[in-house]
Image (cartoon, rainbow, N blue to C red; front, top):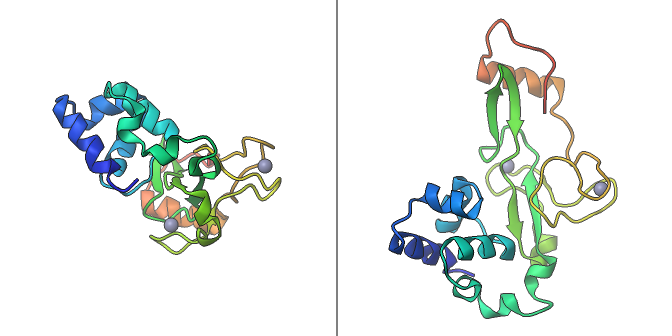
Length: 181
Ligand SMILES: [Zn+2]
Ligand SMILES: [Zn+2]
């Protein structure tokens, strides 16, 4: 699916759409559109289907024929995210004056790469690709809970890490210590 990014960009420009407009029409984030166009992320068939609809083209315009065959590679595609809160691909932000970690490093991979996907290419941290509790492969980009058993997919940042996060964000004096994830 190597040339899909430029193709999305070309179709989008043909329709005189901004990345924001395309993202909102496809109901995906603008960051995702940007990453897909820059080939920093591989699109799932589901995302391609949303984009195709938003661009008024057939899915076959965006997805290679081999991806549309039944029993294709996308069937065992999976997601993984970096569990290092300080990774540049995750985001630290203040939400209502509370330091919060946004796990934005989710990325999709082909099933055939399962055994190679273990470490983050940005920070070298461990990637979470399955639920440590029930072993479920992360087949959908999700939040921090396993969609099968409901367990948290990653350890919460330690107190020491929270101290660093607070220092980095400088939340001010009325900082609420009831820290969300
Ligand atoms: Zn990382
Ligand atoms: Zn689970």
